[in-house]
Image (cartoon, rainbow, N blue to C red):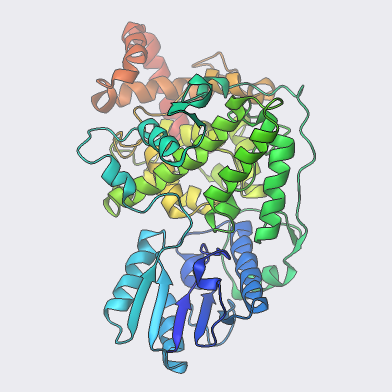
Length: 510
């Protein structure tokens, strides 16, 4: 039987059971397509990363003896459409069965499902063999419950997979060391030189330019520094364990003007295109910790494990539990647009300038920069979540909708009304100062609210609370802040709101 198997750009799992034994009757296909490059404006490094990784994966499959049909972006036979390309290959190869791995994005899942419904050829859908959980595990876990608390899911995952557990209890006596993960990095703990891979992507870059693909971000070299195959990913993971894990938890929320990555692993892109599984990552980290436990505090390891078996799996589960309606949620009724400086980094607000320029330069920002700098600002300026979604999905190399959408629309923008976060993640300048050195060299004063040189976050914060009182006034976690707002002098509040409105109407002047 002649079989055609589709591999999507985020399904580069060389350990998948599909690839155990070469079979001359099986053809694998991968496509670089305008369908995928154009539905949102992506960072140039994101497009490069996907194409380079896909091309490397195709070569790895061929080396193992598999048959591969690969359409590059400018190939004449490439229709730039997933279903049209599939139809072409099914016909030309006289395919008797079409198979694909379950996509992790709703859009592609529906497209392939509809395609198969209208296909005379036999079809088969298989699992991607990547995640700890199945699509609907989280929805089943929370069935009948009013709240979908990640912490409850995380604890269940720890028990189910026996990770950091001793005789049924959390190792170290605590489930969560989050309070130990909030230290400000002041430069006193040295950061080793990063692993930087010299992947030559000059051909990929030229092909993207020839195709005329519109991108955002910056890239002025011909080498791509993130891992693009499993061997490089394992090297990156080894480096994280040996050099960064010892301080990861302490500084996982820290931000600094001189450091783009601090102690973060830089594995998210590789994980999200499935070069390595979360189980491989966690197992490797746990094995290293068992050997070097005298030198590494459990808080460092737990903070990392929580991001993977807790947050990452939780976000995927929430995505599939609430799509497609989730993508249209706007519980706070926000309708403003993002300022131009989100695409240039040209703002006098130092925290935003550093975070956005880092994103433009590297296609990267860690979770607190995304949540409490760019996300915080977008929410305080009451930006429409569609605008924020499109920016986050495009700007980050690791952004794939199943993980981006829930983090952005749910955690960051509270647009889902509290399904993921129990309160909006908003703050004034004080939190930013607490977790970073951004405020020290800023044009604005972190302590002022309404003066010309006042930190914009301060007036925007109190204005947001006042504007959103109908939606948030009864939130049990917001009670203290609303109590302070109620005690504020009316004239002071009026001045603050006037200042905030001016900022919202003239964002690119700040």
